[in-house]
Image (tube, rainbow, N blue to C red; front, side):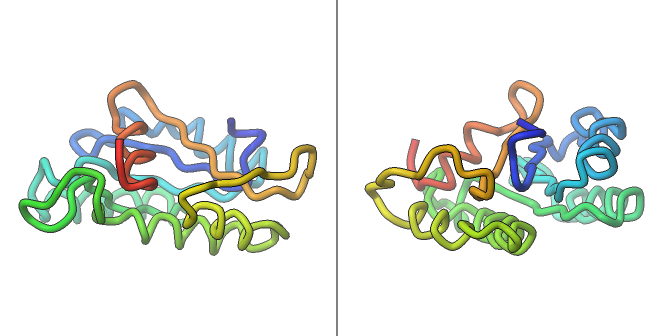
Length: 151
């Protein structure tokens, strides 16, 4: 996934992000592969805002080149799961910004916004792709469900 993706999203649980974000992975993706990397700080609805802010400050101080986006799969208070999830639009916007040199980034976002995703051309080395990686139970599936707005 690291090698094939235009932008890599590492999904981590806000309750202990250091467990899910190994420094060797950050070094490999950014230095050896030279690819942009975003950290999706998941499950922010399970901790208070002070904890989220503290982890974001710590991670940004440790790795200033990383983009860190807090995400909750729930929308407004009492909202439905996966519908208008907090942070998902910010995450997509950051990926779009980082994948700007890919010629197909705008096409990818048009496909994402349609119900019928249509066909994507195969074999194009300049195709815009977002890779999602992370340990089990950190919220990868929930994040993808939030991107499409349903389970």
